[in-house]
Image (cartoon, rainbow, N blue to C red; front, side, top):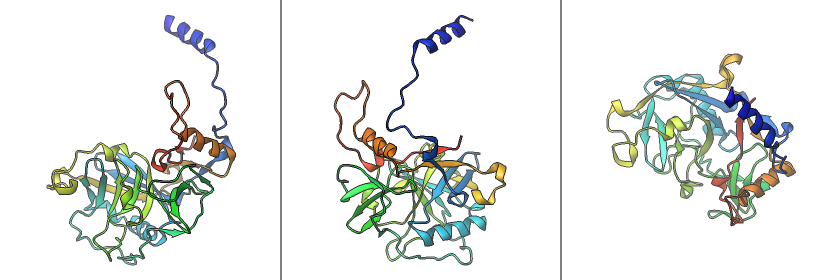
Length: 285
């Protein structure tokens, strides 16, 4: 009873937080389409959800959707590489599993695209580009002149490939689990972002072989299914929302990331790395 009374007194004593210029309103949250959400389930029951980026790598994402609809990842695939401070990679470790009919083995090099299409930008120059900012539908972007690309930030998903001219089919994927390897920008097709469950990949044991590859089958984390949300029954579909970038509240959010407020931050930074200011995504309430 004492704890309940104390909690009630504290609730009365602490005023409600004031609304900040950077706080979103309900209309700022937009549903991620079901066919952009893909759920991977590991044998241990853990799941991670990828938001696909068809706008930026259309042929690669079309391949991924074909593989998902054919349930290609449901047998003989695993997370087979986990390199510390770098990536977790999954697919067929043997690279011998046949692809699904209609999958393009080597799509065009969808590493960058015409731009800019950003609606909001960071105030400072990007270390690896002339600018960095955000698309209308909540993707981080960097660019030079009339070209832009999705940067290699934590949780972003890329297509593993061999040496050029290989571009990777999309059957072998990876996500960044460490410091952002921005030198990979414009060298690999970026096809999405892990928006939920990345901890199940970043916390896996590190690989025992070169470049973080597991040496034995027993070290790998088998994948038991990969499904587009659009294929799942409505009641089982994950629901996520991205924050719209076409409003003054998001501009204020950028400023809040570039100059952190509050008693802890005594010196404002005056800028932010795009990978330290990834656009917000949330589970739909």
